[in-house]
Length: 303
Ligand code: SF4
Image (cartoon, rainbow, N blue to C red; front, side, top):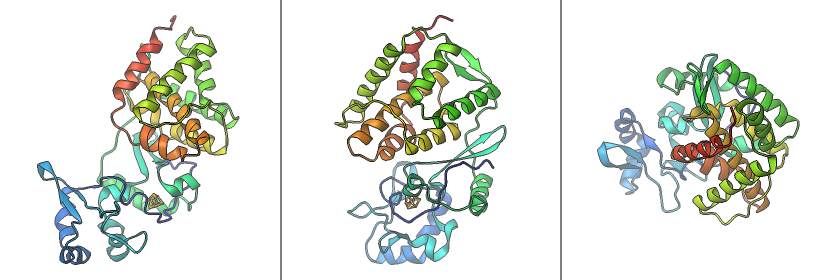
């Protein structure tokens, strides 16, 4: 188990208990139906479980979008009455991202979580048994066991780890990712673009991303502060770059994420919610965008 630098301990803000559709694994459905709290909700006419096509179920929410199992302001009734294991797997797993790597299970965290955003938490040993339970009963993406697509060539895991170390060191020095990746692409991919042209390209992509996200934010230039360093370093640490079809495309998606982060911040929005929730951490449909960005940049290579 490879624990991250980032800290975490749930502060029961309730944010992850209603804003998303939470699917319930089939094996847990009968158990939930027989749960004492469920019987009470049933009598009160509250649809705590909603059946969808194919026999799948997700948790039901009230008119305010709150899970029916929430008690009081923000306490999970399932967790407090019958323990962590009685919650759906999706609830138990959030905010962890788990990946199998050649070095062991990499633990990552979602910056949608309020506790992660605030970096509050306990020693990782206190999460170990929960994480081992999740790892022992589920299967997770495997990364680094085979070379990955990198532009027009392939990249070995060990080389990637060296790059990641260097990028993280430069982030800690306060350099924006756009600057770090630009120099890297020139040196390792033969990118033949001047820095201002590369910056213009990333800005154009970011304007398109803002339109895609249907936000009215004004584009702002990337910078560096404690929170941005903590976030983007963690995105690298949790091996996010390795999860797409082409590492180059993912690097470019991340640069757009950086620009979105600063745009949200400049407009007084929660930058983590926007970038993590709607761009980097919880979207599954950006594959074509990633491919399009990579193909655009490949036109500017000399190698
Ligand atoms: S968002 Fe994080 S802190 Fe808030 S309830 Fe969910 S896990 Fe807990």
